[in-house]
Image 1: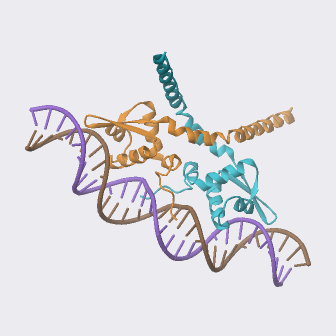
Image 2: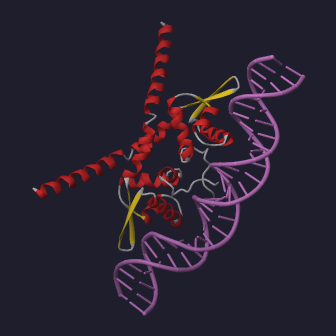
Image 3: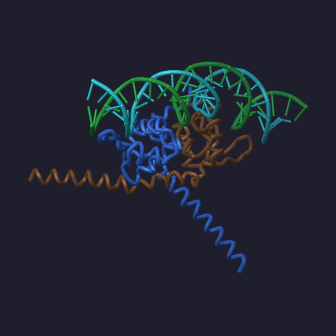
Amino acid sequence: MARAATTSDAFNAIAEPRRRYILNYLAMQERSVSEIVDAMEMEQSSVSKHLKVLKDVGLVAARREGRQMLYKVNAMAIRPLHEWTSTFERLWKHQLLRVKERAEARNQDKQ
Amino acid sequence: MARAATTSDAFNAIAEPRRRYILNYLAMQERSVSEIVDAMEMEQSSVSKHLKVLKDVGLVAARREGRQMLYKVNAMAIRPLHEWTSTFERLWKHQLLRVKERAEARNQDKQ
DNA sequence: TTGACATATTCCTATATGAGCATATATTGA
DNA sequence: TCAATATATGCTCATATAGGAATATGTCAA
């Protein structure tokens, strides 16, 4: 079996750095395709394809305005990713705490 | 150009559902490969390969104990993912607020 | 209706899987 | 040293890209 489709879920969709870049760019405000093309240094066809992937998994929404298509982030679709990573938050905080404790112990030794 | 390597970064590594499953399983405690194989319904070779990917991007750490290899999550490597998703938190909170406001407006109309 | 602009889609190619199976490597105990 | 246990790696195949170029589709203005 090959790798899962990029459109299978948000996790796959954001695996591509350029798609994360697009999402970051759209986080500021709604943008047309050509604005995105200008912001990234990419072919228009590539940008459109990435936008399609993002749209298929619900990470962006689009609306037509005249000849342009305006895309914006659908932040709600990012929530599941945030929640999944949050389940590990307790672990890295614990890890950071231990790092800090060791540092303090070293300082104690010096005195 | 083909898709980025799964080992290119944590984002690509966690795109695979089975690897997220492994991380979830390891979040509870350190486990041997055979324990993971039993927990997931997968071939041992597949599990070892997924573990290699996770290890290459630093998402897990391994140590040998006799004939076994014990794997554990390196939660710190998940932090960048958490932080990236956090940049959109403001947006979805705003979105949720608007949903709530509309619901309240509808209730007002009924009265 | 027609030309121009803005996007989307198709075609082609090189590449990277992920699964299963077979085999190699590492470690322990007799 | 040798057999058994625990993992890792190599090989093959089917599949899914991601980018570039060319082309199709959609929309507006005259």
